Image 1 (cartoon, rainbow, N blue to C red):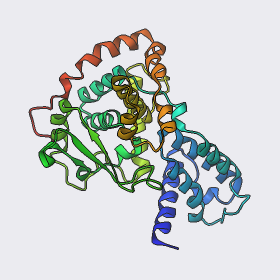
Image 2: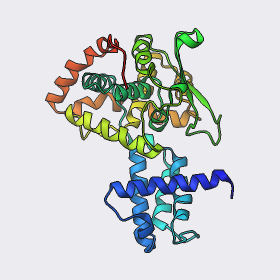
Image 3: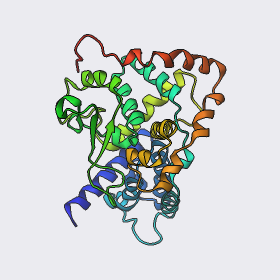
Length: 311
């Protein structure tokens, strides 16, 4: 067994155990005494990963490696039938087909809510997910060293190093995205200033914990704004950013490169102009009024505070 395989099994097992504890379920070691109970719990876990926009590769690792970390050996062709069917369904579908893209106005309103609540970490993560078209897990796993600003390379953009991309198995193991919105640079530099080079922008002990935390924070903000129930999740930011770039340029190749999609077929699932347009029409009137009031403040709140950021 290679060290990488051993680490993969341990990480998958820990993530599953943490999720089960958060759901008030028995520990996986106890569930493993009854294969059916373990299988049902794993199916629920896969569904939660789907909603949070986790990469398919992580779901595959969970089903392949998770059971190996517990006392009962659940391997074999007939083991975990429910989890394996769920995983096969995930592999067949592009999950973006089932997610609502976030319209620009809602992105701006949520950003304003985060900044006025002094949740600058959430505001920056939202900004990077939308404007740099990052996957939720990629954005939540960025470290300070992964963002290289204009002052470091001389070009008017932020280069974002994605060290563990979803497509690492059949594309470059380290990829790059860019943030090309100059108005956002000052706020981003202010936010990054006190961070050590190896510090996460969005702290958390594990990949899974960081994604769960972002999901909770975003869900709470949407609820406060009256936008719950519209199907908006962390991965909606990527879909919304891609759709906005498409509407501004009508350049499919540019959008594909920006989002690092491996194929145009995959990209087309994200370019949901009608979906992004209709989201606000499904919100209650009061929520639409609130979004209309907050969104224009977005540009003003890109100006960083005059005081240095403290951790």
